[in-house]
Length: 145
Image: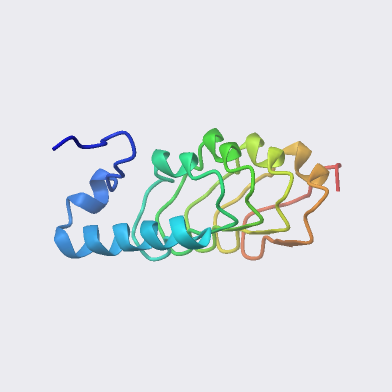
């Protein structure tokens, strides 16, 4: 029997190290996302956005609430269909500039983080209708608003 390992999705090491229950939970959520274009990874104690998620280019919604994410990589821009990104209750101090390339993004929520600044281009997200930045450390908004 030949196996196709090219499309094999492995959970992040931080999930795999916790045992079968968390692995099954994570893979179930990935499976649901592949069928429904909506990914719910809240409350998984993730420290970063798993790299393999950027290959899921058709995702419309990602919920990463209540994790331990301190840094969101520039690779987020690969999720070109993304309409809703929720990052509430993490440890983010900044958002990557590439988030400004998500031209279909209508809702961005990053409440209850440690954001000190925003990318200067964030005001150019023309589809953005809802921006929730409550309970952060922001002192001003970029001039692009």
